[in-house]
Length: 265
Image (cartoon, rainbow, N blue to C red):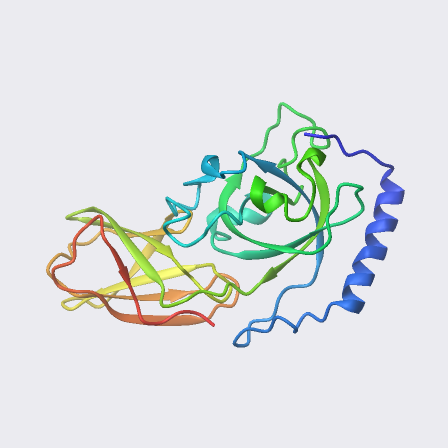
């Protein structure tokens, strides 16, 4: 990684000017998607990990598994703890643009949060410990990073904002667990892309509150085999709640993925 050093006063002054420019020339409603408005522009830094194949970025703390086959592609990023929010940021979409670096390229790129960039307290926060709190940091795949900056930069300052996640079709639910424990990985979430709360209902039960396991997975300790399953979900960012009825048939099995017919807006 390339070290990034300058005086604190100049940095604050410059980034204040950049923020003003972005607020003047970028209308936050221009990417309006079914009522969800992008967040204001903020300042952060970005690095990359892995190589051009992005193979090292598969899996990750959100639990999405193979990011290619599950529809996330290679435009993904690991978030520092400051914005990862204990996994509640999984699935969120961010637009980034490189600023104030000779390594910057023009234009934007949009990434999905699929992983956590943990702190590295053995290194200074301004020299290698890029994801140490309270820093806001994006550790991007190399293909995504190369859309906003030359890879030799190592680290660049960026402007970022949350934007709507545009998905095709309904939310997908991947089942794991056993006969007494249902663990569900939730994917293909549109709107804000994130989740805050989830419930499951069998044909023989009422609504059962599911607890947050880790990343984008939720769990219920209940015997639900032989029942068609419906799910209710609440977005972490927008607080919108939707219900996906009869997602899985009565003969559902662990290890399979089922798709609902609804999604967030």
